[in-house]
Image (cartoon, rainbow, N blue to C red; front, side, top):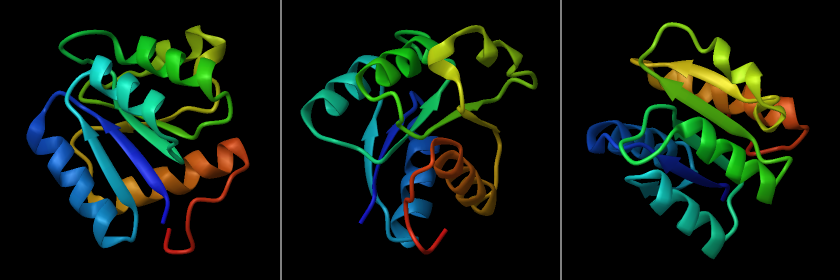
Length: 128
């Protein structure tokens, strides 16, 4: 069962993402802040990370860069309520990050997971 780390400071968003993932046979681990997400990532391996760009304690871009320093091939989905995610091209750590704009439907999330896995050459699950 693929493990997904969800880093978002909005409890409702984390819960929705986790529910969609669990229904589709993913193991979802929720983190309410960048620091909590990085701690969870350091403690156990994950197959993919879903990171909110605008976190209360830090920048999601910085969190993604930290995750990619530890695991360069990690599939990552960046989520944001902002319309433009052009800044994602500013760092080499952000290469192949799939962007998903809030609000999104469950199917959008599943498609983003498929794109993230394809971008890094990995395979997450047959259900996506």
